[in-house]
Amino acid sequence: IKSHILCPFPCILQNDCSYELCKNYGVFTHEYECPCNDSNKWDRDSNECIPKSIYKIRQTREYPDFIAKEKMLRQRKMRNCEHNSMCNKNGTLFCTLDSNYEYTKCVCKLDYHGRYCQDKINACLYRIQHHLQPNGGTLVAGTQLVY
Image (cartoon, rainbow, N blue to C red; front, side):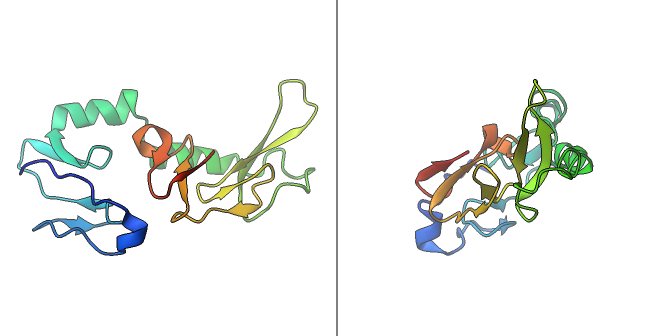
């Protein structure tokens, strides 16, 4: 199977890529997965089949597993949030204290942003960047950048 290029402007097109045998796993046209031969594995970061040995290294060392990392962070979700009524409960993944224990920082879920995680992100307007996202922390969708 040869490499595929990403479908342009997923929020404008609102349709699936027409790659034979490939299946979408998300809402955007660039969120698709294709079958690979036995020695390769589909890599969602690069949207291509890569050798299983390379895929395994990327998952364990250079590219920590997104789901495992998010699960670990969810266990910390309410730590330090009990005394901070400023963090939005719907948008906050967990809270953390600064190094001087002077203030609580709200760490937002993937689809929220803002100082208190109060603003929901519209993925068709923003290019989402979050430390838990695969592909170097960026999910490309819109044109504006959100941290």
